[in-house]
Amino acid sequence: MRNLILSLITLTFLSCNSAKQPKINKTETSSSLNIFMDDWHKDVATFNYNAYFNKIDSLGYFIGTDASEVWTKTEFEAFSKPYFDKKQTWDFKALDRHFFINETGDIAWFNEVLDTWMGLCRGSGILQKKNGEWKIMQYVLSVTIPNDDIKPVIAAKQVNDSIAKATYIKR
Image 1 (tube, rainbow, N blue to C red):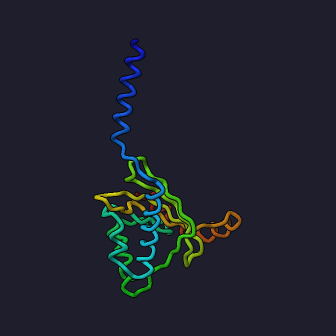
Image 2 (tube, rainbow, N blue to C red; image 1 turned 90 degrees about the vertical axis):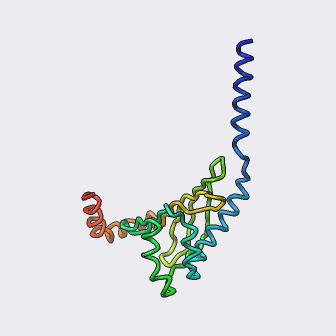
Image 3 (cartoon, helix red, strand yellow; image 1 turned 30 degrees about the vertical axis):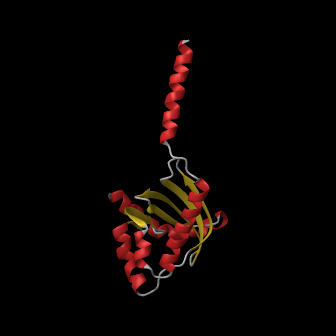
């Protein structure tokens, strides 16, 4: 009898907990996030400064391909503004993208392969739904390098990596 009562209490607790968790349609959410990210990349390619930066949260970060490129939204806006003003921005097209969404549907993380002026790149990031709108909390851009091609790249980066390492050691 005691086990039956404990089981009923546990089931009641679990059902109350699951009732608090809204059921989300991850396929629909992924589809809307895919449009969101495509629009973000389109915004920069079409010089739409406000639309591009409105998609980044005020606490968001953009991490670029250079070791020194870890920018807050404000820093990234300042870096990017001259490119937008001269209409010399970048144009990245997603070739592949995968989203992963938490159970409450308000946080998503993703990775994407991009066709860029640098060749293939990888983007990855974290999105958060705030006040009904998705915002980029962090975006990381990296250049993809085939394993067979890595040795010449390592050699080419050696001097700049040494300078960057010295900077990080001083922190």
